[in-house]
Image (cartoon, helix red, strand yellow):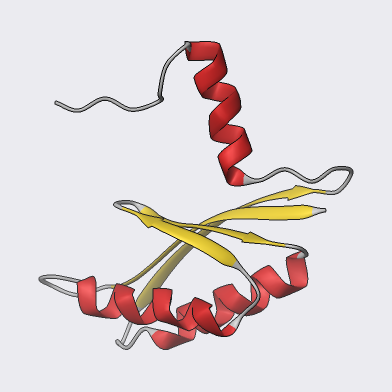
Length: 103
């Protein structure tokens, strides 16, 4: 079983959120998850939903501020194992090219 999630944690503040987002990402290192941060959030992979949710809770709590906004989308594959990379690979197979474009 594989659980894949898209996580975005951010304080509600003026100006750059980078230092606070970095705290959230760093908190994931304490858990048995893999992750990749992109401009819109962090994709996390875990073996089970409990591990994933513990990591997400730590990321949320790591951010300082009077108000913290967290978005979480979970894909819980219960009958087979699939990685985030595999999901992208399948889309690229259908496209016949990489799923990215530089402007």
